[in-house]
Length: 280
Image (cartoon, rainbow, N blue to C red; front, side, top):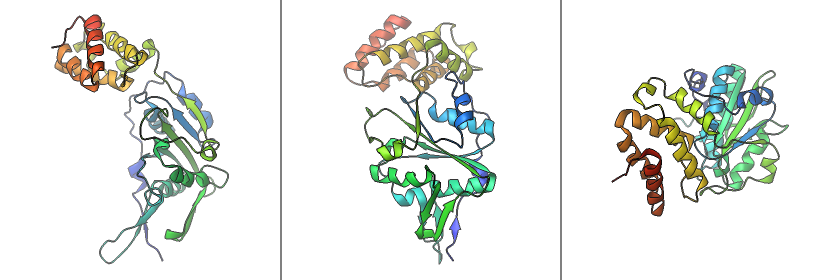
């Protein structure tokens, strides 16, 4: 009999102390879609797509498996493979098969595939059988068919940046047809300020009152201009955090390191205009 191993369910308990401000109303959407309809969140990096799912898992008391997809992922990475360990060769489950096992053990599980469109077209097809009416995956290597027990629930969620990013593929039409897709764009400035203030608890007293608005304005301008890099909400939070601890000029010098070539000069000019700081 094939020996099958995986991490214990306790390893997939979501963190309870996540700071997430639901400015897009995603949690209300998740309540109606979870365990019923597969979902892909589409939008630029750093807008809280994965965080929104993780914080929902914590509220829903559901186990969550987060898997970082890439073009190097192979079938064995997704379903599992045999490993040589001493005189044994146990089959160590991958994220797809583990999700079924955890759902059956705990009652429900969320499988979050980050950058799902980084999977090659061939690897995307492996998700078909777990995301349609079959809701199972056959693994001859393990001598098992992984499926849900009666009453167990599994929700498959993907995140993806737009196709403009390097290292990604177009979604297969057969996979795309198995998912609902929701756009998650950059938040409006007033909503972004809410997000940053929530994350900056304890640091806000170290900041000038207008500094968060200034950083958000800078980020907003990088999103409008034809720059190779746009400052995301995640970047805004990093800059605000650095200003609190490094001071404004040092923090802005660190921030400008994300840009290259002529974009550095463009952003430096905007920093001078917005903050009144001329970077050396």
